[in-house]
Image 1 (cartoon, rainbow, N blue to C red):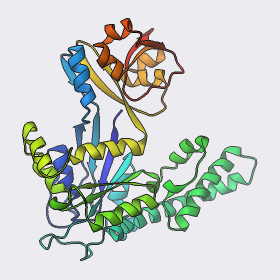
Image 2 (cartoon, one colour):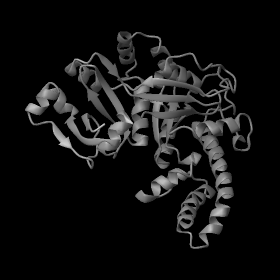
Image 3 (spheres, one colour):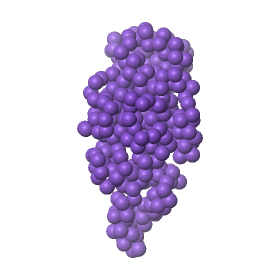
Image 4 (cartoon, rainbow, N blue to C red):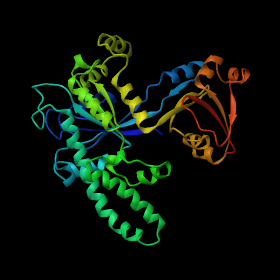
Length: 365
């Protein structure tokens, strides 16, 4: 699995420009007027991981297959979207389908690009979008909780548990706080996720700055960073214009261009890394003469479930997983060397797959 990240924000903050750059396509029309994105645009990009290239070199793999991330450029939101204003209903429906939200905030001045509210205030912009999502969640929960409350007053244990979770979310929403701030036990996490609330989605604030602020940020991005910290969200600094220019360069020229700006890697890489952290994702690998391949899983998954990501039959017939840590695989010169040096081990059904593990699945199927 990879993950699906929705790019949201008010009109004219640069989200479609960022989408175009990240996916290196012109699928989304970037224009200086609200609602230029009429339908959600979707683009898949390979997740950059230097470890995969190294594994392929060691294994002499004929093919390199990275894991992928899906970006969804979602139509711009305005006040009243929770009630269907503008493209609100479409916005809300689209955001329900993503795993995480990359919220693009305008942190640059440009007289040639209008702002829907006529001012540059990224924190206020974030509050506008968050408020609409909270209002939508509040309306949805207040309707859904009525029959659950009636059942909870009986001996229905499942209804009582569900009612308690709904009230945790409602209490926060009524205080003007997103549902993702709910304090949950390990057992409550999955049932709470199934409530499918918009404000429980992990959020990454993307500060879109002018080119000269891409390396250090500016006063506006600093305000966003403080807001993100208070909300237990993430934040990164990206210049959509730089990403757009990078997309037009050949690989060798990109490094030189980034260095000239004081940047060590493209914004895409940082966006993906932050997204993985938000969702608790890790990567494991398979490697051999035919292909070296990266696979994305949720951190904490056991070996059979990881095998099922490769093929469902592997999970059903799982026997063992020959496991080699990435560093050991490279240092030993591959699978055979890892076995000879005792760095390869057989793990059973209770083994929790670690980031960077190289797996060879033994299955009855």
